[in-house]
Image (tube, rainbow, N blue to C red):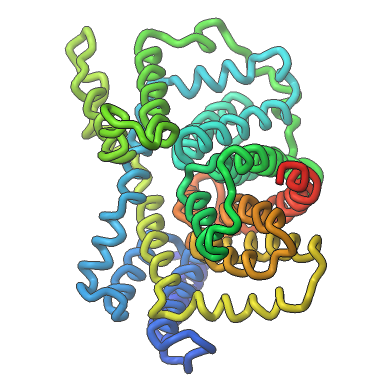
Amino acid sequence: MNTTARAKNVKYYILSLIGVAIMLFFGYLPPIGTITPLGMKVLGIFLGAIWCFSTVGCFWPALLSLILFGTSGLYEGGVTAAFTAAFGSDTWLFVLFVLVFAAMVNNSGASRVIANWMASRKFAQGKPWVISGMLLTIAYVIGALISVTPGIIIPWAILYVMCEGYGYKPHDKYPTAMVVAITFASLMGHSALPFKAAAVMYMNALSTATEAAITVDYARFTLLCIPLTYVAALSALIPIRFLFRVDVSAIRNSSYSFTSDETRFNGEQKVVVLFMAAFFILLFLPGIFTSAGGFIGWLKAIGSTATCVLLLIVAGVIMKKDGSSFLNLAKTFKDGVPWETMMILAFAVVATSAMTNAACGISDAISGLLNPVFGGGASSAVFIFLVLLLSAVITNFIGNLVVGLMFVPIVASMAASAAEAQILVVALAVTTNMSLFLPSASPLAALLHSNTEWCTPNDVYKYTWPIVVLAVVLDFVLCLTLGNLIF
């Protein structure tokens, strides 16, 4: 073993030991504020895992953290219950099957055709920021109409193919920044409509906190939320272009050319596109027709995960003319699922639940820190800005729903008017989804952090804050202007 390799190994073991020590021993420190002894254990496991994710890797730290969560006293069933909560959650299963579905799309070459079609549009040729805006728009629309997970995974696949054509390699600045921006755009799309879980919970919380005196109807929610989210999604390109000055000359000066075959679907790809359309429609229908029965009611009853699985089963049953399967499910599961992604996602599912568990006292500690900030008689504009900024910052560390539900009572009690409370509840549905900084912020943040082939955790830290802060500022302006016109 040469000196360089030995030094690298020593560094790896030291960093690993630091992370494990934090996981094991942080919980023995005296409780802080309202954080209970159980909460100190949970916080130590969380902080140690984040340290390891940022320094040594994701796979074994995620598994170790699940074992420690199981032995912390958080789960009555111990380690088995912790693993069941992680790998048996609907979020984890849905991401698993969507990744398989995306692998089917990518393996067919359909993503390449879509990428080539986009890059070959006359209005986009030689205009890298137009192409980038189109990618973010695709992520936004899929995130809004279907789900945030395919809104990330499918545009990522398109980006990879485009970068191959333009000559970019993994970890070049442009693809790295766009991987982060696509994730953010899909999260913003996921916030745009009022029938998403967070929006429904926040509106109900406002109604409950004010004894139904203040409510937000779906129409006005949508009128304000779509501009808030779409402006935020596209604004991600501003720091990428002007602050980080990402080099896009490869796109502007590209000799990457397309033949008619490269921008047209073949027979197999057309079938895949039909599956994509069915995927989007079947996931979208229950969210639109919320009170429908029959087939749509059945889709709502079985849920998004089962819908995705049924489409994969149909694809696996179909046979090609040559006698082979249209989709080899076993091979696609083996080669198409990034298991490091799934491990860190399992951690995020359990960590988010643990950090917001009432028995830990962590949420109460955060609420205690926030109340004095808003109790100083701030002006209406300052109050709105603080709510947007602090909710966006905190949601990058813990789950978005708990952040929103902490802020809604503050908004209900301290807003200067009913209109201000309504505007802020809509805005909270947006800012609490600006969660990218830590894997624990949301399952989708975990998905981003685990995409180590194209970006490192340090890249995520670097690009996240300018994107989030700019989006908050722009949305603040829209709340003061458009918000006051709508409400």
